Image (cartoon, rainbow, N blue to C red; front, side, top):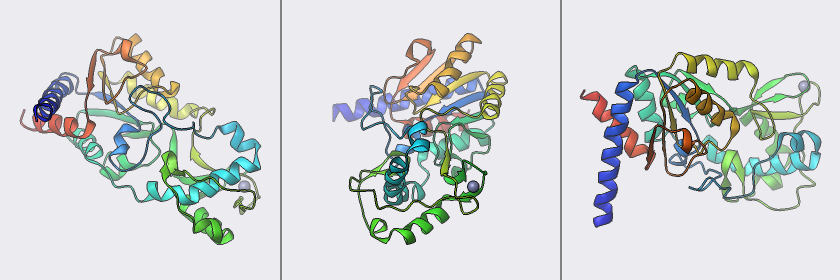
Length: 285
Ligand SMILES: [Zn+2]
């Protein structure tokens, strides 16, 4: 009981402090990570200490080089992608969209590929690591919706389509079997390799997208990182740049971050109730 009181006091206080931070720096550059989407039922990769909870995701080079890696990837995605497709926006997504509506947000850069910020109503979003709901051909650029590709593969692989397994991050599933008979659906125009429009580990963020995020940072008054361990360099670098520019850098997350030493404000607390509390405080200002 005492502990429950402590947690709610902690949440209320963190929410008030966050509201004060936002009011002081109303042109926020927000960076979000997996923690924002875990309340939507999308699993994440890392624990509170920033360590891998499971085997790391597929590497870009392996995906491009190996048919066996692609068979395994797509067979598992056929099962696991349902978690991404069926995910609903969480209170954290809604609270961040509310902050934008209230005029506090210069830009929201997300490392998530689930498009839930857009579904919650955020408009100033950059999908730093791409989006999981579309695929494109690595040879000719042919572009299609991922669900259409999955339908094609389900027809080619009825046995795999009927399988079930626990859902894993990024539309993956905890499925282990012999994948060698899985038929991958290739580009209908040139038979090239189709790949989700996601920046995989080992790949780089397209320069134009990185520059757009950087330009937003230069117009902003502070950085607020939400639900990210900042372990991935493409996100961490912005916190480092902001720090070098003399901007305040704040973090709201459950665990440690790679940028702890750079942070001017840090709240280690559950995201949704703290963000909702901050929005309530700002509404009555
Ligand atoms: Zn093609």
